Every structure is written in structure tokens, then in C-alpha cells.
Length: 153
Image 1 (tube, one colour):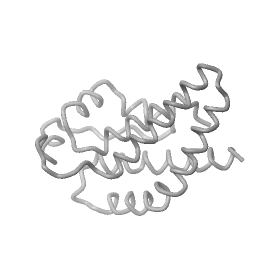
Image 2: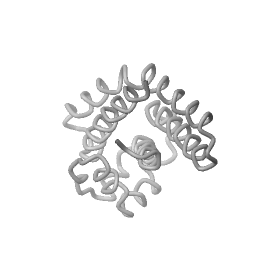
Image 3: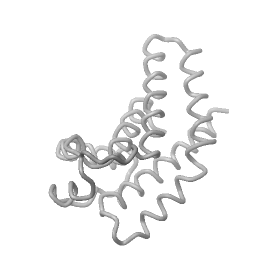
């Protein structure tokens, strides 16, 4: 089972990965954050990528709204961060409340559709290899989160 700080790290990285590609994502990849995320859940390393190829997917000044998946992952990052802060304060009741909110959000809003999304990206041969890998990372992490949820009760 992943530690709360590892879960937080994975949610932050996944949220960043599924937002439109930008310089922040490139910096994260160059710092090896994808490799760390892969090791946390025992997944193969991410594919090699070309900086130019990755940034050609979408312009930084796109008028499209932020990706819904990234928004959900950012919210879960926030909840896990709140849980971690409560644990540092030894506020068990607050930490449990944040855990239960995560459980509800994951069960009701993320899990029902994330596998379908990931399958579609994996099957799309035009999808960038980094995003196909990201979907494998996301699916594996969601599987671990389902196990975590089952242990909450």
C-alpha cells in the first residue's frame, strides 16, 4: 500500500501529465518525475520523448477548457495533501474525514469512467506514446486506490 505522501506525489504528477503539454510538464519529465511515479507503482519506465514532438500536441495559449481528468486529479491531490497535513498535526479525525472524501470522490466520480478513457487512449495509435504510458500509469494507480478504498472499511 502506498504512503499518503506517495499518493500525493502520484496525483500531482498525473494531474500535470493530463493537462495540455507545456514547459512545466517538460521540466517535470526532465527532473525524472515520470520515472519516480513509475517506480512507485512498479510500472515500466516512460517512453523516450522529443521535446519538440511533445509540445506540438497543443499550443500553450489554447482557448480550450482544462481537461476534466486533470481537474479531478488535482482535486484528489488537494484532498490527499489535506490528509497528510492533518496527519502531521496528529489530527486523526480530520485525516479520516479527508480519506472518506477521497473514497467518495474516487468511487463515484473517477472510477466509473477512467478505465474507458484509458482504453480509448491506449487504442488510439495517433496518441502520443507518453499519454498511452500515462494511461497505463493512471489505470495501475487507480487499481491501487481501489484496494486502498476497500481497506478503509
